[in-house]
Image (cartoon, rainbow, N blue to C red; front, side, top):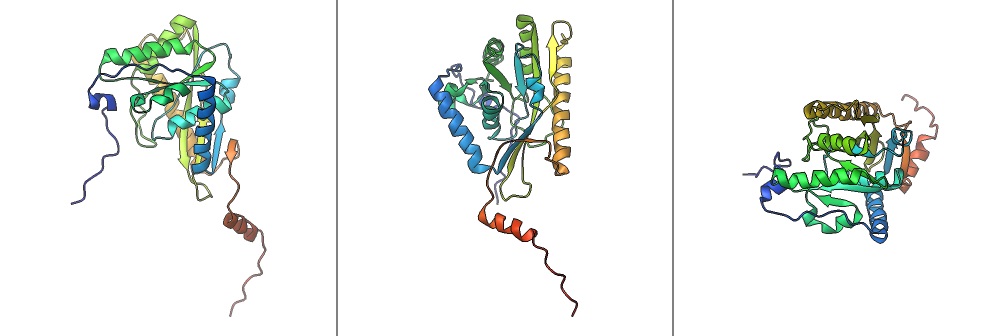
Length: 275
């Protein structure tokens, strides 16, 4: 009998482990940031044909003195590495990323990660309060996976835990304003034998003390719909093969056999006569 493999769980890993784990803050240094930047960029280049993105103006055209939070769905292992390259190579900021499994990879704290333990509400609250502290440092961009657990690609409906809404509300209380930008990630094959990373940044959501909902569930719903819309729009563009409006972070040279294929396509062969 073949054992069925369970790819996804509704229970966070720290709840499954059910043990106390010490909170680990981000502890970046210039040296380790340089190492992480080179290492994570090379990882993408070795596995993917290209990295395409669009909508970065939704960040750059906003008030740069206002704290920014990026939030995205979490479907696989590459998402955190994509976030790292977005913050460092597109927005030129340090990343601050909440990771539940940081105790297994403590070195990541030197690149900007910090831990969260969902074993209890009190443990999780420590990470949320720390997140609010981080938002105010404009050298950083806080990156969040608000679903709280890994979901399958294109999972619907998009549903969040309340952590992002808590961070946004308290950031507005402390700093007066906060911008949130949804980001859609996808990993797709177009015409190459390797997949491509495709990132779409959605419309900037600007909150201040006058317009942010006081009801956390209402705020959560607004943010869920914003991310779902961004992901759906990206899916539509990908399904039509339209990548003409995307910027390119990197794109590999064609392999020798792909170059031959491209040359053959440009040759006008005479029609074959009927026998």
